[in-house]
Picture (cartoon, rainbow over the protein chains, first blue to last red):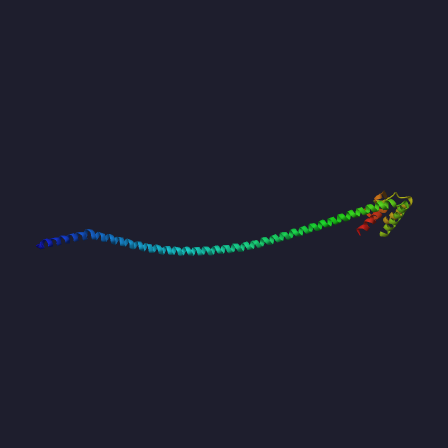
Length: 161
Length: 71
């Protein structure tokens, strides 16, 4: 078998041309696309890092805001408790005062009622005694007794003057 | 000056009692001649009450009884 050097050279030149064409027509655009993609990924990563950082900052701010809100809420709650306690004390004091006033008023009413009842009983008793005395004494007095009583009465009146 | 005098007794005054009342009223008013009105009120039981111009001298049995009870 005879080696054809010319054909080999021609084949090598053809291969070189194909490689050159492929390099310029295929490899270069692909590389460009890959570079762009890499760039985009890098940008995406950077954006992601930035977003993460922003998220962290935001979380931090949220935490601070929550903490402040909690402190504020606690303060408000404490003040509300203090106010409620104060108001409660005032209500209790008012209730005690009103109860005391009612008690005193009732005692006064009871005392007044007792006094009135006692006076009424005394008056009724006096009336009864006088009525009985009048009935008993009046019937038993003779004319002479009346004369004597009038004489005695006049004597007392003159002495009293 | 005329005086408003009322003498109250439990029974009608006898002439003897009227004389004693005249004497007592004269001494009370300071006048020798006095006119007075007489009233009979059995409620006073006995004794006499003399009212001179609103001032009352009460020597009745009922007044004494009331005084006794009030003590």
